[in-house]
Length: 305
Image (tube, rainbow, N blue to C red; front, side):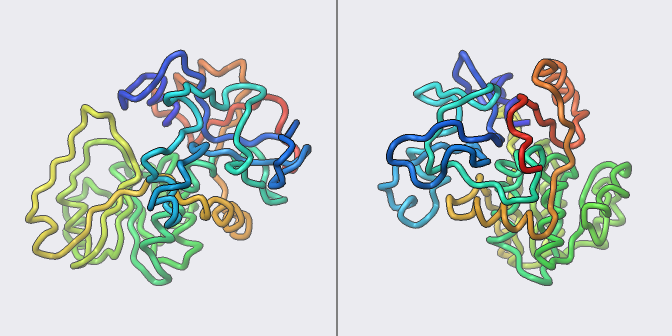
């Protein structure tokens, strides 16, 4: 969905001409003379980040995703090109080996959706935590799987009753319909962490009410810049709740996330589409009909599946 946000310039950060694509798996065709981290023939994954300054306090602390000099996979000052292509040139340090047994079409979405949901759960949840996952979509269906594999008590939170069965299949222990006032009232004060993967204008007061005192509301979904977030301070100050964001993940988490996914059989639900149908796939995402990640097949990276 992030690629469509950029294509439509909903975040007011796109640079044109634009070649999107930020969840990529491919086979290494050539390497530079000093590259030691991968070799020709390796199957590697690429995410939304291609570099950082490696000099600031954040990089030194292993927080490369918040480096002021972050370099994205595509766009930016250099107008780099993304993965909607048959070949691309990329820094070797930000290419991550795909574990054996993890199919390429399933590994690719993990390079953004996976790291984006794995990181806040690793950071904020522990075994036994009551975790709510808001939004059962491209991010949320992975977050449910990660939270379950981390031995959390997992509740799927959705405005739609139609995703009940799927949420349970992804690992939910409970299902909370956010439009059911009686159910949300009963659930008040019972969550340690609410991870919001949705990107719309939500009832933030209701979500904060679900938290225990000193609980955390963490956001990974990014709405358009025209969608303000309205929160009353009384919803979190008096109960010492925390509102935070999480963006991608540290460099050191990528390989851990991939191996954790392989070890626990965590995979996205995908639709594989030949690249010639790219425009149709983009329209499907715009209509919110993708279930749950659309993967473009360029014809060169299904080895190892």
